[in-house]
Length: 85
Image (cartoon, rainbow, N blue to C red):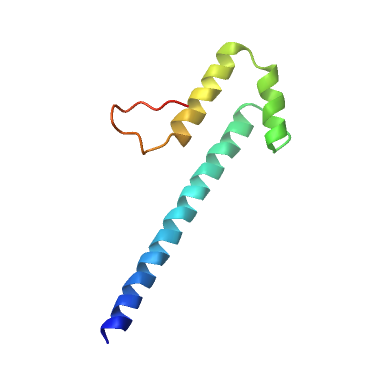
């Protein structure tokens, strides 16, 4: 009896983990789609983004880079709240 309760609890935990990962993936996909729309990138691929970056001036590039750093920063380096990329 105890074994089946443990399996049930682990199963519920696994479902929650998958749901959390799916939620994160959807949020990041929305972010990337927003970047493509904001900068008017027609080709929805990494190559389209790379072409747009080549056309940008330094100020625009730094702004875009900051947006990506903010969205995709690692939460593992919380010591002084700075992360190096």
